[in-house]
Image (cartoon, rainbow, N blue to C red; front, side, top):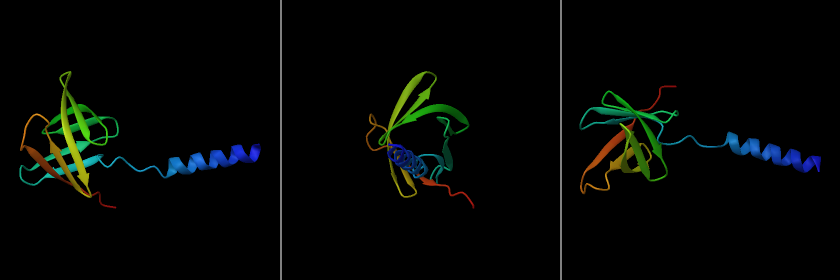
Length: 102
């Protein structure tokens, strides 16, 4: 029984150690507007000099601005972030991931 518990514990540690970082986290730059957006681990997002709270799942980003939720769809492919608004056709924002220097 102790061997099984030890094996389960080691497996759990391995899974935690292998968890991937949220691809949304970090800073993104829009070349066309010169704007940058930064998503932090603490659930805050900074854009155009304003910091707001956000929530995200795999496809939707919800910014909480002055108590109201602003819903956006998002897609991340490699180092590209595309934001679109469900209520606005043909309005999308494109950002490139800013790489950290190692």
